[in-house]
Every structure is written in structure tokens, then in C-alpha cells.
Image 1 (cartoon, helix red, strand yellow):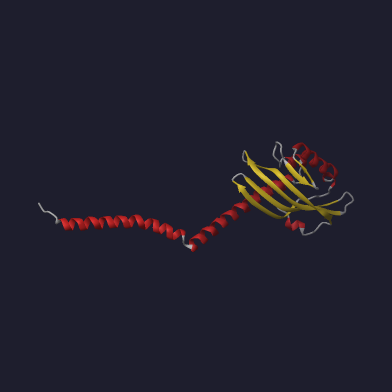
Image 2: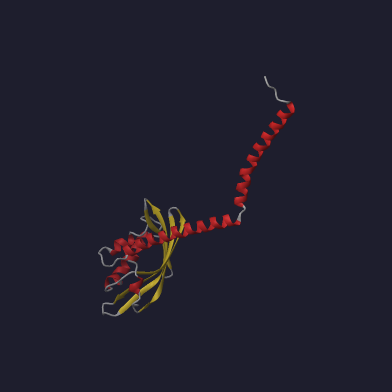
Length: 202
């Protein structure tokens, strides 16, 4: 039976321990080097920013589509569709014309009053979105700001435009996006702009 010299055995065991220790230290060293590498961090930041931008662009498409579908004046039931944009239960916070309401019932009165006084008297109205900016506030919450215009003709056939900016906070409940808070800022009326037709959201 062959025996190994004790000195050789000790050297071999020490070498094995050194190799194992170097393996343990090697992996954390790589992770530390990656974490401390500015190029790697910049790449991650750019990738995260691109992902957020794509997510917000998709949100802008979705939420703008909801609004433009509701403001399709060519179909009956406009008042019901407009009210359907909002959460079904109080509070629904709405700020417009220097006043704030938190009641969905009051919001319904305001929408109905707009349609009775103005909406049903407009000839060939179109709802046009010019600018839109959406930001995700969470997996089921988002804020959308748009500038909009409603070019039309008055009952006397004169060109007229309603326009303004609108910021709305949406939440998603049961798979459906709905407004829980909004602020509208109206612009003074102006003549219809021929460029509106080119800017209209299809």
C-alpha cells in the first residue's frame, strides 16, 4: 500500500483550500465590479427610462382613446358616455371654472347642463386632442394631461371653437379605467382652425 508523505498531503490540502476560497471571493467581486461600473449603471438607467416611456406612451393611447370615444358627437348617448368616464361612486373630484365639486351627482348635472346649453346646439362638432402626456402612478393608476379643442359651427352657421387643457387622474377597477379626479382649464373661444382636422385623433 502506497503512502503519501505528510508534507505533500499538507501542501495539497492547503492548495485545495486556497482554490475554494478564491472561488467564493471571485463571484462577489464580479458583482461588485458590475455594480460599480458606471457604464453598466448608465445602461440600466437608459433601459428603465425607455421602458417607462413606452409604458406611458401606451397609457396615453389607451386613455386618450377612452376620452375621444366618449366625445364622439356623431353617435347618440353623449351625456351617458361622458358620465361613464368617471368612477361610479363618490368622491369624484372635479375642478372647473374656479370651483371644485366632489359629488358625482353634481358632476352629472354639470355634464347635462353643458349638453343642454351648448352641446346639442353645436353643428358638426369634433373633439380634437392636440397634446397628450400620460404618467403611470402605479400598476392601476395614471394621470393624463391633454390639450383639446371642439371646433364646430353655431346654430347661425358661424365657426366657433371650445378649447382648453384637461388633467385627469385615472384608476383601473375591474379592468376598466375611470376618472377619480380632474381639473379643466378653458381657453377663450376662438374661430375654428382648419389645422384641427389634421390633428384629430382617429
